[in-house]
Image 1 (cartoon, rainbow, N blue to C red):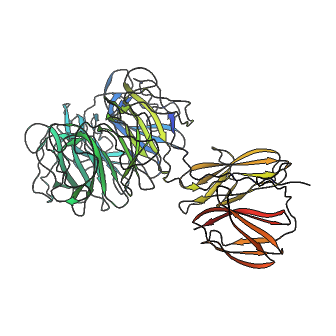
Image 2 (image 1 turned 135 degrees about the vertical axis):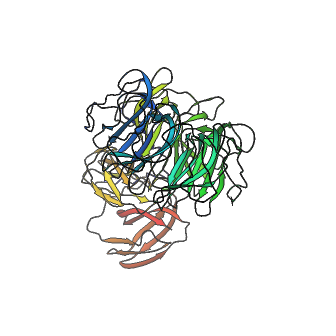
Image 3 (image 1 turned 120 degrees about the horizontal axis):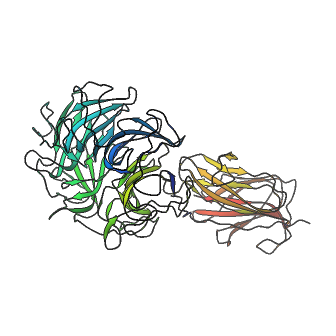
Amino acid sequence: MRKNILFFFIVISFTINAQDWTWVRGNSTGSVVANYGTMGVSAPTNDPGGRHGAACWTDAAGNLWQFGGEGYASSSTMGWLNDLWKYDPITNEWTWVRGNNIIDQNGKYGSLGVSSPTNEPGAREFPTWWKDNNGDFWLFGGDGFDGVGNFGRLNDLWKYSIATNEWTWMSGASIANLNGNYGSLTVFSPANMPGARRGGVAWVDASNNFWVFGGIGFPAAGGDGHLNDLWKYDPVLTQWAWMKGSNLIAQNGTYGPKGVALPSNCPGGREFSAVWKDPAGAVWIFGGGGYAAAGGPGHLNDLWRYNSVSNNWIYQSGTNLVNQFGSNGTMGVPSSTNIPGGRYSPVSVFDNWGNLWMFGGIGYAGVPGIGRLNEAWRYTPSTDEWTWMKGFNGINQNGTYGTMGVSAPVNTPGGRYYNIGWKDLNGDMWVFGSFGYPATGPINNLNDLWKFKVTCAPYDVTDAFGTNICTGDSSVLSVATVSSSIVTWYNSPTSTVVLGTGNSFTTTALTTGNYTFYAEGTPCSMRVPITVSVSPCTNVNQFGVGIPIAIGTELVVYPNPNSGSFIIRSNLNEADLVLYNTLGQEVYRKEISEGKNSLEVDVTKGIYYYFISKDKVKVQSGKMVVE
């Protein structure tokens, strides 16, 4: 007589760290010269040269774009660049779209407001950039070459149209190192113009207005320095308005109480902050190089939120000091005491689940010393908590590249700054190039392209229970989800063959051995393994009673989940129901009869297992959730 094995494989919480890096393409060494190929033609051999300080955008199709920076064009001589590239994640190929394949080129401005195939921004690094609500790319300022060959700080504003493949000079000057014309606060004017600058941050509001904050550059008068002015550009009026902040340089911040919006609040002058815009339209900036509440400049770790409707800043998190070490806590564990160290020039993206992500930069980790960083951090606005997700809690680490195209837990880009980053259509973070550490050797200009798998938090698939069955049987596997996403089932961590969809999945009849199936909650794309062990069933169950499976019985348990009240319909009389908790302890026992049995158990909320038998013969067992 065949005997059934009954074991409980219990997973109370899932702590799999699925945030892995993949080295997608490019080189693991530095100082790499570009391979341009033919303009407008993608090819597997095309690659931008090593560079830092470029601009970047994503288009509606999910392609990644970048412009300029300082680094290598078609020769081994380093300089400033004005080449425009497109990367297609599906084909894994770069296309040189336009611009020059030589360094240090002047700008070709043409006529203000007039698109032309001969227009070209001059070679530059550290511009400010954004994409408008129509899908066009915009570029403002930076350090580079103006229209007459002078190198300096710029305040020219450019628009690039994908449809026409043309640049348009929209605003600003064609010469470098100009002071700003501020006008009156919040008042648009054709005479207004931000001063030339580098390293500011920018975003687009719901009305398609453009905002630019800070950087190092020229104020209303005098020499350049750290700025904390906030500007708004109306593309319909083609005019600027000075909205907030000072028209002077080197201003300390006014912090106010944390979490309180005050008209007097304002971050200090700074450059190279991280910036995000959340789905509600609020803008967040973190850190940068500049001024805190008092004293001189340094590396900042303050988090600010700006509301464009009220025109107020809110000091949200972090310290109002410079050069602070980080408090990393435990990797993967959020905490109110966690905080990244002071830094500037990290990559930042806002994921599809409402979290802010930040990678790299130069500054302070959780140990003494200042250097290039490769930490990945996540901030959750709803809980006001930071989580150290990946990377080294230290400085100046070389990269661990692994195998190109293959993700692995040990893969990590080297410490770096002045890199660029994108969020793709799946919500994952991409990072390209930088001034940073390759696989071995000293710091250098890099052209490596990385992808970081951003999963939702908390993890979407939960309650994943393995099971034991007898040879020749099938198994019903089930999971729960945090969100309302649809679960997809696979037979490997990387397979694209879908076995089924939904919160439960029934396997085929299985032969003796161990099988692992994977449940993936969309759009989280984190696969959770569930193991099925199949044996000839010659052993006893964990309760010490050999019980064969009864055949020809009909039994239904519903609703499930329930509040402790449930119904069992059965064609058996004098059957036994036993309910166990997740520790295997009996918490309820009841005899059930043929027909409808209305039952109520007095237990705490949680996961339980029911076991129904008739004359010591197993009829049915399963999981029950009490909510």
